Image (cartoon, rainbow, N blue to C red; front, side, top):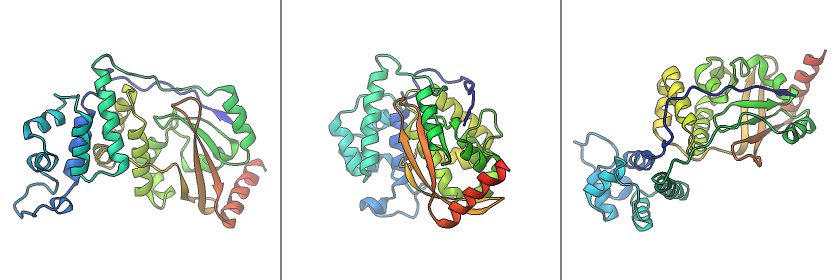
Length: 291
């Protein structure tokens, strides 16, 4: 089992990172909805495929000026009735609607004082003991920035040759978007990239380090990350099956399960073989490393 001493990312954003997030999230959803989706006629002269501000205001029963204040962060205290009307007008999913209400609640709280948190960068002894018990399952502990904090020997055997652990500190998002080897490692790279960005966005609450990290990653990785981050995605999977193309044992199909630890910022991810060929491949990696 390995534990990595994670150093703090560079600062660069002040504490109230969520003050403009309500408006930005609302704008991102408005721009992703087409007129046809809400029953409006499609005009060939439109400059954007999304809804105009005036169209959304009419559908939601609010003034254009008020909607502009919301989107520009000049009004951070919309009522539950207004939020529900906007969610209905935009045909938001239950998940998006809930997130909109949560953003409004947190943003209102920030006016009384920033709600910031520090990234957890240590793993409690009890969690390390759990990791030891999970051998030989590839498993790891990750914080909300995507920093890998501790992992089993089996996980190291699985990902060391892929380059996942080469960065100091190792980070799953950095590997996915910056390391060229990630596109070879993940046959379905686009889906993996979408899910990692959704995780980062959903877990960003009040921590300026998340936005600082996202800015740094956007500068380094460019549009593949920046455009996904701008969409403010939700819906990252906590369980499922992911394929991994391994240079030594070929294609592996791994069932993953994500468990929330008592430390709110930490998650434990356990990988298991989803078929016989994958089980054989994992066993071979274990045997080769120990021989």
